[in-house]
Length: 327
Ligand code: ATP
Ligand code: LTN
Image (cartoon, rainbow, N blue to C red; front, top):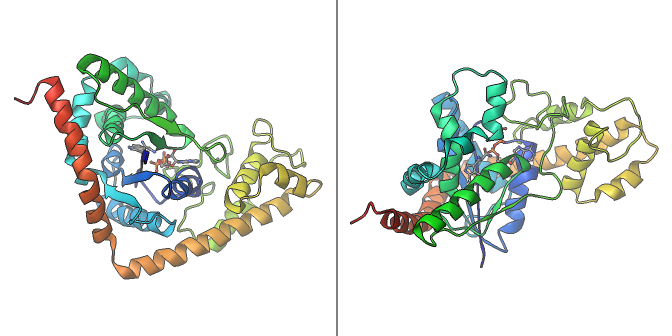
């Protein structure tokens, strides 16, 4: 069975973008692959987090994984910081990644160009830890949204470099980007990714939003003045985003939706999208509440850790032996 691994940062409440671009895909794949999904809690610390809020986000992230349909019997669900081998491998990999490569990371360049002050060195080396998160488990595939592709490419580069320097050690994994829904855009500014760390939450649907409030966000989504329903992400980004969300949630193809909504106003499309979003949130939140009452968090994470650690440990020992730091 081929192996698959991915992670999500608990840097805020999970969003509809995380659901469509990542979680929904993980659930789809868990029957076919040996699946590992972790909570990237160390990565979250690259930007200051209030400890109490972070603790709540950690719990909610795990519960939402389960509410979305990840089954701990099929998917190994674990906390990044529980597997110390990952961080240790991260340091060794950072010694095989050049400063120039980190300087080229778009996430870093974006923050720099916006003149963000107080960027931590942890933020800068973030991709080196991500490479270790992945390579420690020797996966075949890494399902991620579009924004993470560059990080997975760096991971591939360091795997190949390490294998050339020290002999075949790492499997070179492939990113798996959904054909549709890999980048859900903000409802209030469809030129930007829907992001959980956005200052304003008008354009972002959180999976734990009150379903009625989420409806309102969809109904006030920014569109355009063309007043025609087409799938044209370049010129009609807002409408294309609404069609993408509808299609991802309803399973109806975008072509069929365009045909179905032809000649109708944006209000009708928004209402249909709002119905889909509301339905999803009600279903997820019902499940979330049931799971909350069951108090199963610690058990799920302990089980995930027990299944994951052996693999990461074996990789680390092999790496340490190959680089010469073990006698
Ligand atoms: P932030 O919004 O704070 O930058 P993030 O949501 O991008 O964080 P993660 O929570 O770690 O970061 O992302 C988890 C997964 O969700 C990744 O695979 C990412 O590519 C995907 N993802 C995040 N936002 C979107 C989006 N708007 N559309 C599609 N996929 C997304
Ligand atoms: N960088 C990712 C989260 C992440 C991840 C990973 C994803 C950390 N380690 C390993 C896939 C595999 C993000 O910000 N979305």
